[in-house]
Length: 165
Image (cartoon, rainbow, N blue to C red; front, top):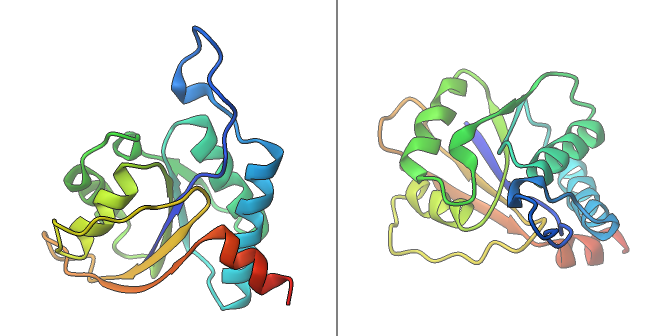
């Protein structure tokens, strides 16, 4: 399975008294998400399934991905993908999609960095997953404990510079 870990784009500041889960993407955040998708799409990426954290900014990121990839399937919301979720629980839920060749996961830090380290069987690995960054990890989704292979990491600044060429 090709797994694409995609951190949400830049979100608005939290309103006093509003939950963190209600923060929406800014116009700049949406633009950077699209920049990354445009580049990875040119490289042949086309997710078979899209899953997302239930938080608004991640779900909006997943929605932009669905639109830009031409994906017409359901975007699945997984409670295990909240910012302080556990990598083991997220992996358990992602294995429900083991029959799919590729899955795009829209989520948050610190979970995505921890999940990448878990999937790579490198618990000491520290990743700084910038907003609107995407990580590709290939793995055998049938194993109870993953042993993935890191294929690439793409930050939005690099995506913008490569799409402007």
